[in-house]
Image (cartoon, rainbow, N blue to C red; front, side, top):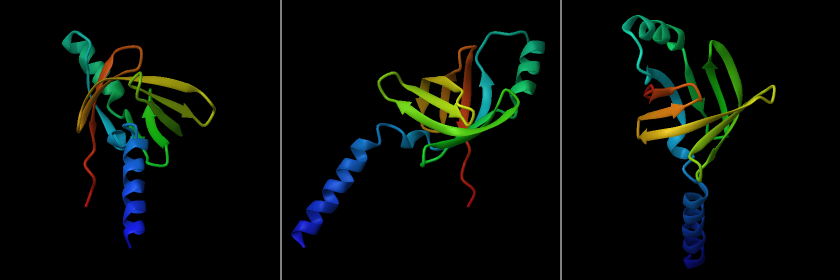
Length: 125
Protein backbone atom coordinates (compact mmCIF):
# COMPACT_ATOMS: atom_id res chain seq x y z
CA UNK A 1 0.00 0.00 0.00
CA UNK A 2 2.88 2.34 0.85
CA UNK A 3 4.44 1.71 -2.59
CA UNK A 4 1.15 2.56 -4.29
CA UNK A 5 0.98 5.85 -2.38
CA UNK A 6 4.58 6.75 -3.38
CA UNK A 7 3.86 5.96 -7.06
CA UNK A 8 0.68 8.08 -7.01
CA UNK A 9 2.58 10.95 -5.35
CA UNK A 10 5.39 10.79 -7.91
CA UNK A 11 2.91 10.76 -10.80
CA UNK A 12 1.14 13.80 -9.37
CA UNK A 13 4.40 15.72 -8.91
CA UNK A 14 5.73 14.80 -12.37
CA UNK A 15 2.44 15.83 -14.00
CA UNK A 16 2.59 19.20 -12.25
CA UNK A 17 6.14 19.83 -13.43
CA UNK A 18 5.48 18.52 -16.96
CA UNK A 19 2.66 21.03 -17.45
CA UNK A 20 5.06 23.94 -18.08
CA UNK A 21 2.20 26.42 -17.90
CA UNK A 22 0.15 24.85 -20.70
CA UNK A 23 -2.98 24.17 -18.64
CA UNK A 24 -3.58 27.84 -17.86
CA UNK A 25 -4.25 28.47 -21.57
CA UNK A 26 -6.79 25.69 -22.10
CA UNK A 27 -10.22 26.76 -23.23
CA UNK A 28 -11.79 29.13 -25.71
CA UNK A 29 -10.45 32.70 -25.81
CA UNK A 30 -12.57 35.39 -27.46
CA UNK A 31 -11.52 38.81 -28.73
CA UNK A 32 -12.40 41.61 -26.33
CA UNK A 33 -10.30 44.63 -27.32
CA UNK A 34 -7.49 45.88 -29.55
CA UNK A 35 -4.92 47.93 -27.66
CA UNK A 36 -3.78 50.42 -30.27
CA UNK A 37 -4.63 54.10 -30.09
CA UNK A 38 -7.19 54.73 -32.84
CA UNK A 39 -9.90 57.22 -33.61
CA UNK A 40 -13.37 56.12 -32.53
CA UNK A 41 -14.34 55.45 -36.15
CA UNK A 42 -11.28 53.27 -36.84
CA UNK A 43 -11.68 51.49 -33.49
CA UNK A 44 -15.27 50.60 -34.42
CA UNK A 45 -14.08 49.15 -37.76
CA UNK A 46 -11.33 47.13 -36.06
CA UNK A 47 -13.81 45.77 -33.51
CA UNK A 48 -16.19 44.77 -36.33
CA UNK A 49 -13.36 43.03 -38.22
CA UNK A 50 -12.16 41.07 -35.17
CA UNK A 51 -15.52 40.43 -33.50
CA UNK A 52 -15.39 36.72 -34.47
CA UNK A 53 -11.71 36.26 -33.59
CA UNK A 54 -11.17 33.41 -31.15
CA UNK A 55 -8.64 30.75 -30.29
CA UNK A 56 -9.49 27.51 -28.52
CA UNK A 57 -6.63 25.55 -26.98
CA UNK A 58 -7.30 21.88 -26.19
CA UNK A 59 -5.51 19.61 -23.75
CA UNK A 60 -4.44 17.27 -26.59
CA UNK A 61 -2.43 20.25 -27.95
CA UNK A 62 -4.82 20.81 -30.85
CA UNK A 63 -6.42 24.19 -31.44
CA UNK A 64 -9.22 25.69 -33.45
CA UNK A 65 -9.95 29.29 -34.13
CA UNK A 66 -11.16 32.04 -36.37
CA UNK A 67 -8.20 34.23 -37.25
CA UNK A 68 -8.38 37.11 -39.72
CA UNK A 69 -11.80 35.89 -40.89
CA UNK A 70 -10.60 32.35 -41.59
CA UNK A 71 -11.44 29.18 -39.67
CA UNK A 72 -8.34 27.26 -38.63
CA UNK A 73 -7.42 24.03 -36.91
CA UNK A 74 -4.03 22.60 -36.08
CA UNK A 75 -1.65 22.09 -33.19
CA UNK A 76 -0.23 24.42 -30.59
CA UNK A 77 2.65 24.52 -28.17
CA UNK A 78 3.76 26.83 -25.40
CA UNK A 79 7.34 27.95 -24.79
CA UNK A 80 7.64 28.91 -21.14
CA UNK A 81 11.05 30.54 -21.65
CA UNK A 82 9.78 33.07 -24.22
CA UNK A 83 6.15 33.13 -23.03
CA UNK A 84 5.11 32.34 -26.61
CA UNK A 85 2.35 30.16 -28.02
CA UNK A 86 3.02 28.78 -31.48
CA UNK A 87 0.02 27.67 -33.51
CA UNK A 88 0.59 25.57 -36.62
CA UNK A 89 -2.38 25.12 -38.94
CA UNK A 90 -3.13 21.98 -40.98
CA UNK A 91 -1.26 23.41 -43.97
CA UNK A 92 1.90 23.76 -41.84
CA UNK A 93 1.79 27.55 -41.48
CA UNK A 94 3.15 28.53 -38.06
CA UNK A 95 2.27 31.74 -36.24
CA UNK A 96 3.89 32.96 -33.02
CA UNK A 97 1.72 34.56 -30.37
CA UNK A 98 3.53 36.48 -27.67
CA UNK A 99 1.64 36.44 -24.36
CA UNK A 100 2.14 39.98 -23.08
CA UNK A 101 -0.07 39.67 -19.99
CA UNK A 102 -1.96 36.80 -18.40
CA UNK A 103 -4.43 37.22 -15.54
CA UNK A 104 -6.53 34.08 -15.12
CA UNK A 105 -9.52 34.67 -17.36
CA UNK A 106 -7.99 37.43 -19.48
CA UNK A 107 -4.79 37.67 -21.46
CA UNK A 108 -3.20 40.15 -23.81
CA UNK A 109 -1.48 38.69 -26.85
CA UNK A 110 0.65 40.21 -29.59
CA UNK A 111 0.37 38.74 -33.08
CA UNK A 112 2.90 41.15 -34.56
CA UNK A 113 0.46 43.89 -35.53
CA UNK A 114 -0.88 45.04 -32.22
CA UNK A 115 -1.99 43.70 -28.89
CA UNK A 116 -5.32 41.94 -28.47
CA UNK A 117 -7.17 41.40 -25.21
CA UNK A 118 -8.71 37.93 -25.11
CA UNK A 119 -11.17 36.68 -22.51
CA UNK A 120 -11.70 33.01 -21.67
CA UNK A 121 -15.22 31.84 -22.43
CA UNK A 122 -16.96 30.42 -19.41
CA UNK A 123 -17.80 26.72 -19.70
CA UNK A 124 -21.47 25.99 -20.11
CA UNK A 125 -22.95 23.76 -17.44
